[in-house]
Structures are given as C-alpha cells and as structure tokens.
Image: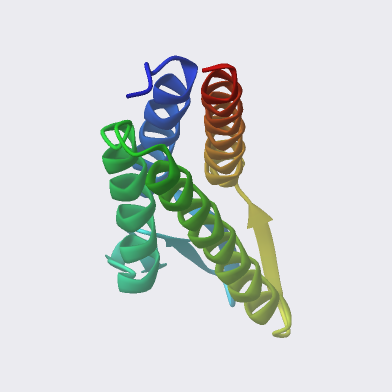
Length: 149
C-alpha cells in the first residue's frame, strides 16, 4: 500500500478547477449585433442559453475520474492509468473548444473573445500531469524498496 502524499492534493485541485470551469463560458462571440456564449452550462444566445451536452459530459467525466483517482491509492498502476486517461480526455476537451472557436471565427462578421476561464481546464491538466509525475515517483520508490528486500 502506498502512502498518499502530494498527488491527492493535485487531483483535488484539478477537480475543483473543472467544477468552477463548468459554471463559466469559455468563449463569447458577437454575430450580427447579438452576443453568444459557449460553455458547459450555458451555450447559445445570451439570455436564451442551454446546456451543451458534450462539454458538460467532458467536464463531469474529467472531474469524476480525478475524484475517483484520489481513492485508487491501493493500486498504483490503476491510479496512474486513470490519471493518464483523464489527461487525454482533458486534452480532447480543449481540442473540441478550439475547433468550436475556429468554426465560429471562420464566419463573416464574427468577433470572437477568448475568456480567461479557458485557463482553468489548462491548469487542471497541468495539475493532473503533476499528480501523474508524483505517482511515477512513488512507483519508482516502491520498485527501489522491493529491489533492496
């Protein structure tokens, strides 16, 4: 059994960042005098927004996997695998946001504004990478301890 240290804190910070990101729009753009937003819990024309199911599903999946990953400390290899999958899903979400931004930006008369909230999933992915690195250090420490026995 591995004693958890800093990776649990990194994973918890990643969960908090993704939950906060769900409540704010990643992009705002103006088309024909009307303002539109794009985010997990609000997407569409300002005042008449709806939930974007793909973005919300990705945010919930990343948050849920990171939260579950905190409690997988008894199986370090599984914990590392879940963390790596979480990183890949987070990168896929960022790619989906960028594709949406470039599709919207390609239309005539569109003024696109990136919001600072888009930094939250990037920071979340960075914390997931730090957690994965800490898990790798734990795995190396266990391997070295087993070698000495």
